[in-house]
Image (cartoon, rainbow, N blue to C red; front, side):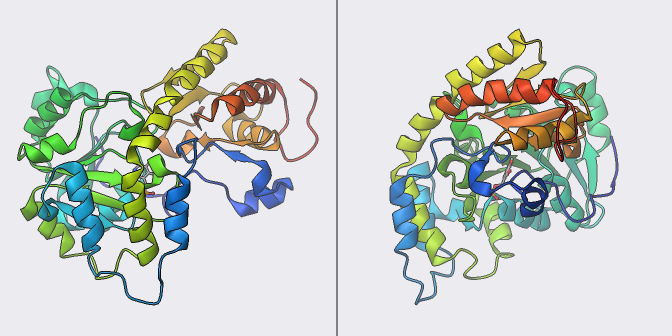
Length: 368
Ligand SMILES: Cc1ncc(COP(=O)(O)O)c(C=O)c1O
């Protein structure tokens, strides 16, 4: 357990391509397949792109994105008072932390996990209390009650481990914390036969569910997400969100995205086979892999020449970007989003080649 703890200078570390790094390596963005941001490999649906392109920017959007909020409510079998549309899941996380935490409060998080949780709790003046999910059983429960939480934040399935909790496990956690749970389900559209986190809202439990349109719809530039929860909790969070936070483009694209939700989910389900194939092939090459239920896997590259940063650069030179997991406290690991099947067949030899090669990726490499 830690109280407080410094956040990295320059903000929270994330995946994604950095222009500076590409320039240093002399690479062009279009020549790199970005597997560091964990998006749906099938890409955005054309209807979503067309809706975004046709949005009329000459007028203000609805101040609270009411049309999209109502459509999400219908889609989720909830009342509109149980939905808040936000500019991305990240905004939802920060707003909820500010609404539900006060100076000095304890916020439970479950590392390794998405860095924005600690950042949001910090920004709200709260103390971060790191817990492990293993503590849910046996003696850990008593210890857990020693540091009462005012809020707990859980990622399901978890980034970066892909670990996935079933509904009864999340309900057990809710009982244990005795405070609201902020449940981030950004990656649950990729879990085959996932349970519906909105059922917890329907059951009247003290939970705010964070949804992202980014990952399933592969539109990180759009900035669209939403919260679902009880009407009183949603009201508390909504009070902190300025009018017009969600723009006309995001609203139009979001309405189109709801229409093709099933199509995108069916495409996402195909990830499972490619993920298993990649894991099996890497395992056969004696590479340590952790396969969760999300659209990414963890691979241990720590023993390679120059460690993870050098490996990452060597792989970038071979056309693939992966996420260095040092900021998650896992410096030997990289997180790799599952690519389309044809790209996975190209990734495997490139990955094994970069593992065997030496050098820091910046200059000429010694042959393996
Ligand atoms: C667990 C998790 N939640 C939320 C986000 C961000 O979602 P959004 O783009 O909707 O802000 C990410 C992005 O990496 C994530 O990993």
